[in-house]
Image (cartoon, rainbow, N blue to C red; front, side):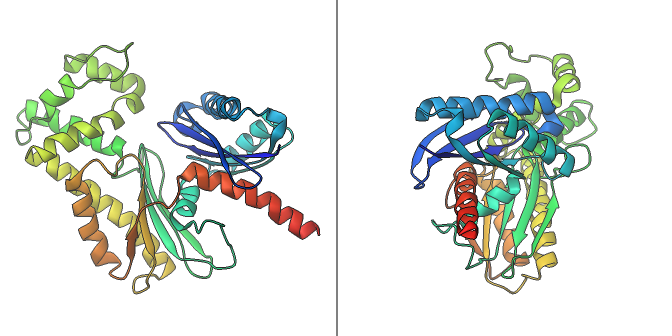
Length: 326
């Protein structure tokens, strides 16, 4: 049997979907983070291969059965990174045609998917991605694309879970030093469960700051639910952090809208990533911002998962090759 793999790989986790030649779903598994710019190339490569092998075992298939792979990987917008990942996956799955794109590209495909992934009828759309990082990506009716953001935590990722968590720690410490308004965030952060049996609860700021210095990705994104909870309970500082995140994400969308000249057009505007679906405060603020930026946009959710969209693209790439060959 010929099978096709699709990956959605970001700074928090990797998802792999397996489809057969007819597009039937066979398996889906999740693994560790695979953004090479955040975890390193070795860990990213291992996460991709390990997740795929477990998915193949679940589907009762061998590596030799993989005919094509489409991997949407955070950080793969850098050509050097994409080439290295293509080389690695081609070696791991020698019978497969391999394509590596960014995770925001497959998120857009997931938002605009029409079931058969018909490329003869282009649909315009923009997707805002906010998870560990943040970015916006879009396509107009002619096929022109544009993106904004996605530059990593050092110079970007505004509105991401990482950014929200970082701002929460900053606000908590400012309140502690009487340099900012009072907030319950400090107490909530120190009481937060880490979700890892090997990592004890953090009970003091010294330990928290040491963990941030050692591996900030393991701390900041996980604090987003703490901020959402505090905002829902009426904490004004938490609400301000989320309102600021909404403005940042809307700014990314506006940059893409302007680049593609979609301001007065009707197009699909979707959201993807772990930040969404957990805070009514953030999403209400974001929807209000987006309504003023693109008044004719149709707000929607992803029609399929990004990993499923990637697997469909892998399957379609082989059918296109076969059609062109004939």
